[in-house]
Length: 240
Image (cartoon, rainbow, N blue to C red):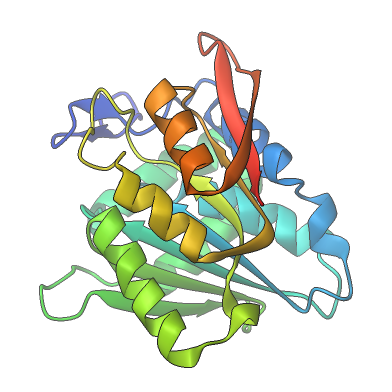
């Protein structure tokens, strides 16, 4: 992380680029899911976003920043992310020093998350819940494989049998299929669909055919959008 860009030893790839990383998050995940406009709807008292691949938390921080500035007074954010290899608090503090210099608008959100973030993760507890900004934002962090974590969420949802608690928007992140093929499987796409309601939106940085076809088969209408920088295309869609 000497360059300021954290590197994953597991997947031999960078989490993001400090050259346009925030703008990429805003374009790929917020814009394609209709944010921040959807934050300002009084009828949506709880907005639920799900993410595969929490990483450094950049997507969460950017979302939280825009939510705090745009959300209706009655709206709260329930953000659920799954991460198999979480960074330690010391690693995150190092990353956030770079964030605060490069993107000072995220400084408050970085500090708020670090106050609640555990020093280390053990293998006993895999579900952490952080109430931030006086409960305006709640972050649920599951330490697990993406598909296993989604199935855990699905098991909890089926016990409650409450359609209102389904995810409203998905950030399908994580390392590219070429780097992380185990994640991008049909079981994952089906679990995403089962945790969604009609109208749930989804977006991802990849345009790989296996991802597009898998999401369509699972019940999403998928489209391509122009990418940013070297990325030619990305995917976005909505649950039928």
